[in-house]
Length: 96
Image 1 (cartoon, rainbow, N blue to C red):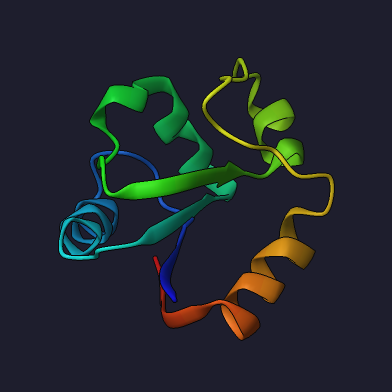
Image 2: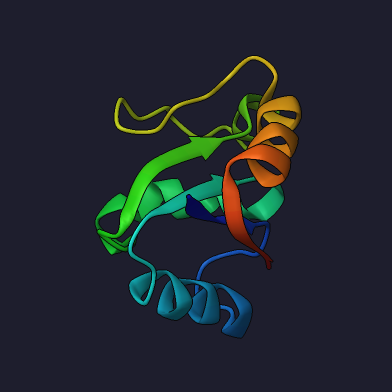
């Protein structure tokens, strides 16, 4: 089972920094980026290495004009996949 993190806060906020500190303590994590959280894609090297998979909301990326990254998955049904992971595949869920 994994820890699922949903990050909607922009980089350099106290909430996003707390999210990454908690991710460092996780053995197996999935990171979902939505809203202003997609701005973290601009500094991909700053993301914790503990995140096994990183997902981003395609609509939020397009709305902010951010270039896509190969290492980040953008599912067609972002929120459906997030809900399924939260309910079926996660021991803990953190929302920032």
